[in-house]
Image (cartoon, rainbow, N blue to C red; front, side, top):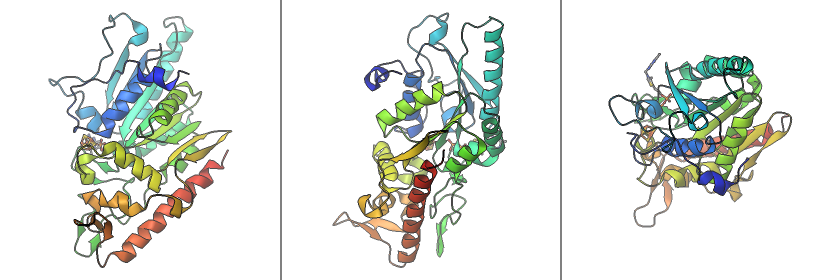
Length: 337
Ligand SMILES: Cc1ncc(C[n+]2csc(CCOP(=O)(O)OP(=O)(O)O)c2C)c(N)n1
Ligand code: SF4
């Protein structure tokens, strides 16, 4: 494993030129994953249809991928990107793993490639849940990265199984008496553990060092490693430019998506998010920064305080209770070995 500084100075394979929204967390995740994967092994990414895919690979736009000025025959610097249909990035990654292992065995490859599947939460947890769970269940030696922006962003910001309670989305609108999404999100961290993953983490690049170290560990994992990356979405969550990293940190610290790293046989831990609510930033601060929750909490223009919209006190109390249970659930999961 490399030191954090050493990784930070490596070459990312994700370069300027994408049409992702400026400041999109998906771009920040790719830049960091690109650096961590510049480790002397060829990398293969499989990418399901998502913002990350349509905004970086759409012909004839600039392709935002490439690694330095290495000549094409510098195999260890090279990487490949395989498009696949919306729902099957993990299955295709598994196929690449198998082919690479066979080619290595017969001497056609010097060393196996490292394989990473990338999808949005819609691709991984809604239409592609079967692909995700079966690849994990078969213990495929791949890294699966799920960029969790809690919506189907590129098709119009529809609800996904990862949407947090009370969020306004295009299919769970907050209108009149209806307070936005009423479904509790799928417990995807637990699901990945139960399906047989060797390593499961929930962490975004807002926790810079933890993120790249976790990606490094995932790439070295002997079984399936699943990384859920909370990805604040400027256009869907509706927040001010330049706040992506701040919001990702706040969401993690207040308990909406705490940083969590777990390994089979060792257990796991919640990072930077105390179990006691009183020791965490109030969830209202997280809500007030996004217009998808403006029916619940707004910022007072004079004082700057996050204020509950009159009549929504009971909804905000239920949301606080959900956040507490979310934190408790991850602390309990950390005890599993
Ligand atoms: C089988 C199939 N159904 C629907 C679509 C349309 N589609 C493409 S991307 C997408 C949403 C992707 O959402 P998500 O995976 O969360 O990624 P995001 O756009 O949020 O990055 C949908 C519905 C498709 N391409 N293929
Ligand atoms: S819509 Fe959201 S996820 Fe998609 S590119 Fe913009 S900020 Fe990123």
